[in-house]
Length: 147
Image 1 (cartoon, rainbow, N blue to C red):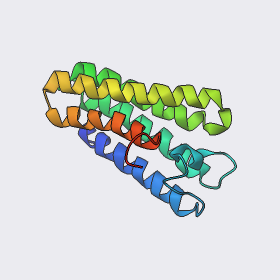
Image 2 (tube, rainbow, N blue to C red; image 1 turned 45 degrees about the horizontal axis):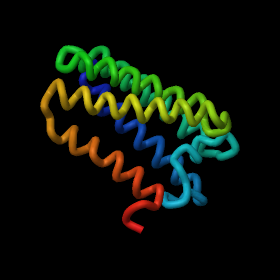
Image 3 (cartoon, rainbow, N blue to C red; image 1 turned 90 degrees about the horizontal axis):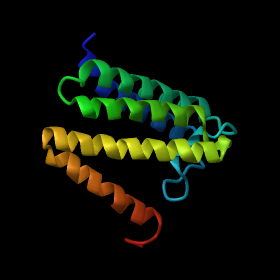
Image 4 (cartoon, rainbow, N blue to C red; image 1 turned 60 degrees about the vertical axis):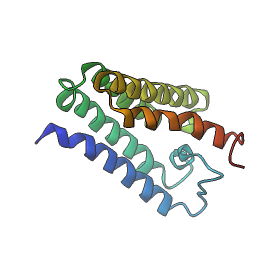
């Protein structure tokens, strides 16, 4: 297996898990629900959603160790931590309350650090542009802008 394929496979498996979870959750609304709601153990989508997070996290870790560490070693370390954090979100779903909040926060922090490391190591300005979307997303979902 070419290890470089594990990165795209991680993204694909995550999107597939989300799409399956949403398709069996008619109550889910993008404007009213967090994705974490799909992983709530009271919902039939939980095994698909949480399982998808675990699989995607493992693929991200594999990609960072095997397929990415030579190109951008610091990014690879943060990416591995991002994958592990994604798995923790799948294990400690929203039923776990505060623990879920902290592992979700850890995921977004490592995602941000991964993006910053990638920008500094590769000078890829697309990575920087994507990072700028994070505060805009936060402002939108906290009803500060675009409402």
